[in-house]
Image (cartoon, rainbow, N blue to C red; front, side, top):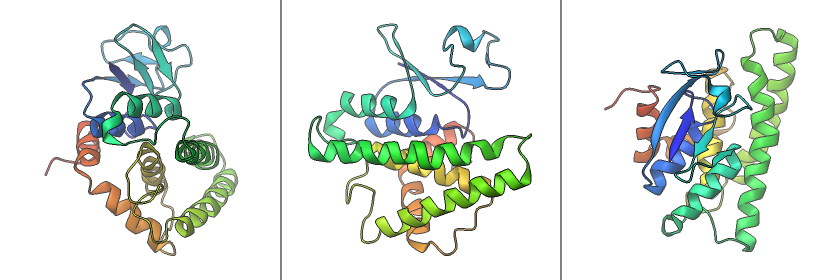
Length: 204
């Protein structure tokens, strides 16, 4: 498999999933502004959407959209329990979390990276995202991870959004449960490995 990524982008979520799953893969860096690969090839010829993540399977098929990709990765390494069994009530709960993170966090924080967005608009998106983080802070009370004691692919996605919030200078001091959760996920060896591989932190 081949993961098309940009450092620190939402592709960090499937990158974490691949490492946690222990699946073999190659990393291909994408310049999202230029829509070019490191070797100069046109990324739009790989993924006409022009976005990461994109996962090229050994069959030649390309899978896009992070929540779909991470579930596929989890299903390829079912013994790692990165997602509950298909068709189970718990699997639908995982999908609920992935959808919530995708629609309520990803789509509110993402626009804040735009250089053309006004400060008022950024403040609007920030306020909306903070409301969602407050909800999550309450939901994580007494839990190690979103699904309870077991780390799942939803945690890799939420961790990525928390990393974005950190880059955008969100004040999370009033959300101690969420901050403790972020630190817990960050301490996982495979999460650290993904951050190192993307050049986001230095190897210890």
